[in-house]
Image (cartoon, rainbow, N blue to C red; front, side, top):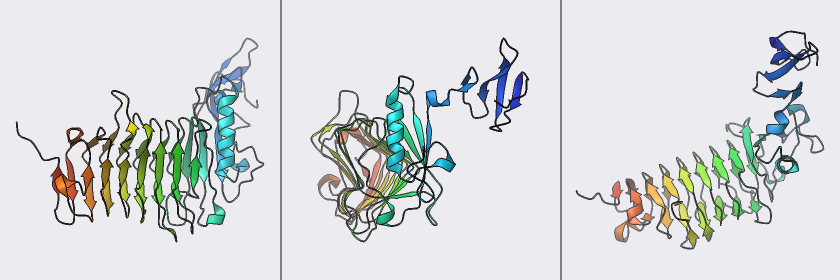
Length: 331
């Protein structure tokens, strides 16, 4: 272990980490936990029993590496996703775990990127580093995730997504995937052929999009919800720009009783309706909306939703400015 015999805090001479240790019956000091909060049992780290951390370096990584340290990083995110997904499923120690993938990449060309067809269950993909002057790592590609395998609870944090340069298309197409989250991410449509949509989710429960930015001339709705159950939908604190609709929820979407979706505190600028909730049972609260379209009947050019589920939204259209929607009632 490379440790000195002390009780309390000591520095492991091999790992250089500070650990808190106690004596065993033989008088040997065994670590209980270290400075990173990793627990130990009989001197062995329990970190892998609670979670594993994988590393992706799109420049220096090698896909035959184990991905378990920055110096043995893999090159492709898809490789790390496969490793994490397998580790969660391998034994009962991983079933309730949440793994991490640190993604460092500055992909700027289609040839640099990859089209994801699989994610990883119960895994956080955390962007680190930067892409040129941009403060997030960039992943280039079109990602189609079918419902053949469950990747429940996969979250992307601080990652920038850009479609393939020439072909455009949808950036993420998710079918039957539950608990997918995008947190503080950025989606860019401004390729040679503009992307059509940023996120399309069909029959996905628990989709959460928080604090994200969507920029460029998306030629279809930026965020689309297709037929099927969408309990717990949350879209909040986002900045959404597009050349069509902002958020489009199909009438064939369903919410279980008491599990309605919520769209709140977003700023949306589009050429058509900013929010179109054809289902009319999504809570739509405190959004700031601007469209190049005319207001239409009852502000339908800007926002379509169940009026009793909406509060404190403000709408600017080509023929009206800063209109409160729905109109304030009287007591």
